[in-house]
Figure 1 (spheres, rainbow, N blue to C red):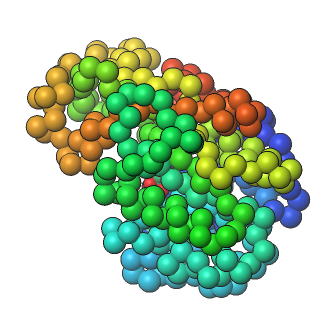
Figure 2 (cartoon, protein in one colour):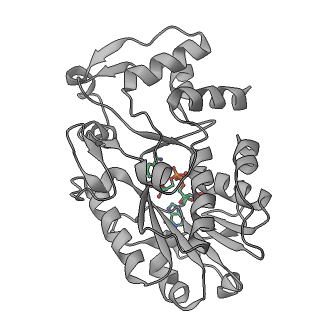
Figure 3 (tube, rainbow, N blue to C red):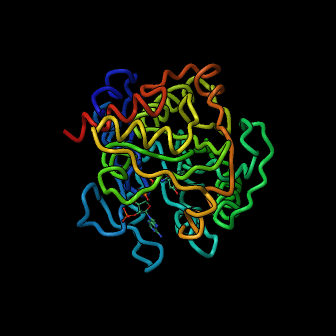
Length: 297
Ligand SMILES: NC(=O)c1ccc[n+]([C@@H]2O[C@H](COP(=O)([O-])OP(=O)(O)OC[C@H]3O[C@@H](n4cnc5c(N)ncnc54)[C@H](OP(=O)(O)O)[C@@H]3O)[C@@H](O)[C@H]2O)c1
């Protein structure tokens, strides 16, 4: 919940002006938190009539922004995924400007898909990256492009993002899901409160020159799809969806859905939570889903 993140976060450095590319699910939440903590925030969406849009930016139709927007910007956050051709939409148009302006910090929201398959084992920031999916190969290339700018940058690797309005509660309410059973398969997750909370934490640490290049942002408890959906069904007091074997379910899955089931890893948050001292607001999916339910009421 927004007020929980704000309550536990330190104020942002004075005169912070944050430019957020991609005010979608995570971007808007980060924007709302940062504003409450005293920053000026400008957020893009592809259509500036959409909720949360301060300016329009759509790389696919060359809907571009005025360079004036960059004036006085201290922090940049990109929440926009790579384009289908592999280009980073932000860097394609604004890489040179971003390289020139004196920003204090930039955060690039990436995915833990860059690690590839670890057969259910833990991955840390030191684990080798060997992406197998095309979209993860593109993502790793975009990470490298952001790194090559030579700006004060942190790459934030995220597993499955959920929060109010986009969680297992909605899957249960829509009654379309079966619970897929694939022995040993787990997924890591992160609630949007902890994406926003950890970004504020990292920005403040960066001021003190504590600045690892890559950070996993995940909760403490990787879990199976059945555990999460069952917990959501119980919270909503709805019947459990039927269990279906992966073998059967996979025949009906979209290529995108199937790709998620083809990789298995647990994402370690030890660097973020032990070394960098971030305290999770939602330590696991149970706490996170209870929060989603409260927000939906
Ligand atoms: N969802 C997950 O479970 C997950 C997991 C790991 C990592 N990630 C990555 O983390 C980031 C944030 O995730 P999210 O779920 O919050 O994303 P999201 O809700 O899908 O938001 C993506 C944002 O990017 C904008 N965008 C997309 N293509 C664009 C283009 N070509 N030009 C300009 N803007 C464009 C969208 O514009 P509109 O607002 O107009 O739609 C939206 O604001 C993304 O890079 C995502 O791929 C997501």
